[in-house]
Image (cartoon, rainbow over all chains, first blue to last red; front, side, top):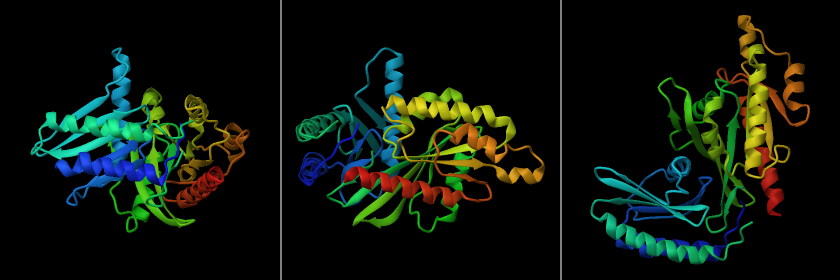
Length: 134
Length: 201
């Protein structure tokens, strides 16, 4: 699929990521497409992750998990969560082509994070709703 | 297709190294990483099996500066060449902008090259892309093996096998020594950029 995003949509998405996630204590969040391109990213200023490599791996990881889902008769697994000692990663699919990846510490509970991620996903869906997809 | 970010003035371009197993795709990326490691700020990412074969992909991002006022970020990927890993190969091809097909010039690998190119065509078709319309460069790797007396495919044979319909740029190369590795890369970048600029107009 090919799509275009305008300045306004990108601004809107960054604002959502900042307000719904960074402002509540998430370290780093980024929005990618399934090809591994970064569409928008925000962090709290302390994170120094290599987001381009993370995006490539995340897209690959999600693709692999989707293929597993099909084998066991599920259409897809729309969210994934990897737990670490200090840092955790949460993946959430948005529409068919996009993924939101959130990196957060143990200061935030998974339940609260999922709630905020859901809110952000809904707002981003509204912004993406008007994209020129073909 | 390439992702263009008008806000950050940035273009992300995906170039995939494709080809039969043990053909030298990862070696191409390793050579590029070694040669330009002063300019490449990040580590090369590889997902390998214990036997040192690519399991999923290798990933190498780098900047090539500005084109028409946009920062261009080139992202090189390789696919696993082994036949059984087609599902992962297809995943990596998603959103590809340009392809380097690394063929193995050893005479014994003739059939494998042809099958891999056919597989590429099928996998692209899965994304509704035509192999004839995607920017592509052919690389005939391992030409250095001639010195050790290993039989290689004559250039005319390999061209006829792989390039008679594609009619695209091709280079004999040695990824391990570095012969024509950078030439191949420059060629695919320029072809891909030209195609993206054309598409954006």
